[in-house]
Length: 331
Image (cartoon, rainbow, N blue to C red; front, side, top):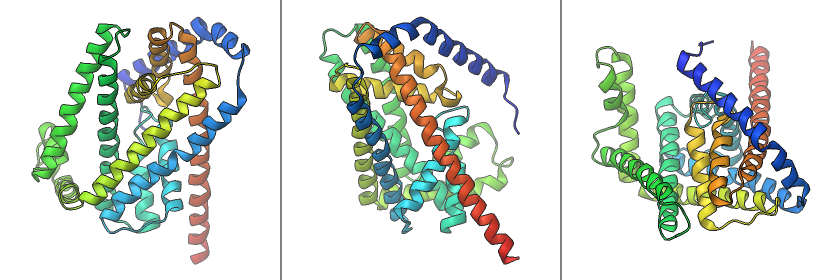
């Protein structure tokens, strides 16, 4: 097993301390908030939406694979998606780590070659970021016309969104001009001679992604639409979770919550430990002057993701175990 480096250890300790501090500072008021009138029916709606929100995520990936003429069933891709989510959630970043597993299972179970599988997963991540930037721009517009929001918060989001727009646009431009992105990126840090074995693979993956963006516009647009659906589900999830606490939110607040979730998941910490709590507590101090609300929703969201991860690991063990038995029977 690969050891954690000093930076990762430092981040983990910092995240853990942030988590403990959030519990210490806002735990008592969070319990008071729940006791004042928790509405169970809204929590059940939240959980139902959480389950359904995986559907457009799977359909997005299915649309991308369809662009490569790979017809794979919904339930197969859902299983692979859950397995990838489980691994991602417990690795140092809550949004990465499971992609190699998704590519491997896609090859093992669905006979999709590694290059096509890699291109499909990278495109899936790209569509996620493209969609997130779109909603971020909408949030920024709503933020600008909101006089009650502090101007420094508006400028911070403006700077962050500008960087994201430039990044997403730059990547898209590279691919539609067939200049590639991943091979040149690796080549910036490592010479082509040193990555000779990987260079052809990276160039082929770049080529496959360029072909998709240029010639599979229908699949590209369809995958983007599915992201929009998943984002709407995500915003609705938090809407009903907050309603269960007796807290109502606007569309702007819902988008800001989702942006903070995304930012927290980018911090290289398992389960977004500390970063999620700190982000949501800080946001709700600004939005509602009550950080305890942010602590509750971050803890509930964490518990839900742990449950989903447990399901993902069970699927990995169950289907992996079945394959081992089949291989033994074939001997």
